[in-house]
Image (cartoon, rainbow, N blue to C red; front, side, top):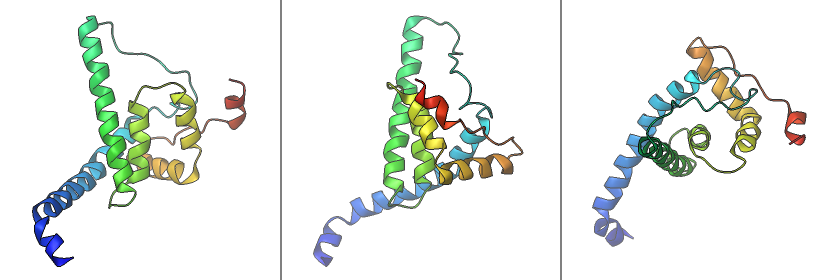
Length: 142
């Protein structure tokens, strides 16, 4: 075991540095993103508010948003076993990604008590109104 640790010492230090970086980055970025959400984000219809742009610019923005979402998703999954805000990071990653039935998954996740309480605790610290919780029976009509 000791020989293996010595053989992969550089890799282990790199993974440790990456873990510390992701922990600090999520401590800074997640509260900012959650505080910027409108309080009615989960109860209103989704709005595509990106201005009309050249198709190439729009495609680049969509790809960049999804790439960031994928990176956050992988980091959040890693933070389930490493230090960091794994559930909140996964939640924000899902909000950035584009996939079918995403809205249903977002609403299902925000109704999970730990996520809802953590998000509203962060919003309260930033003097923002609490998130409105979507009603479960609305989801069944779809």
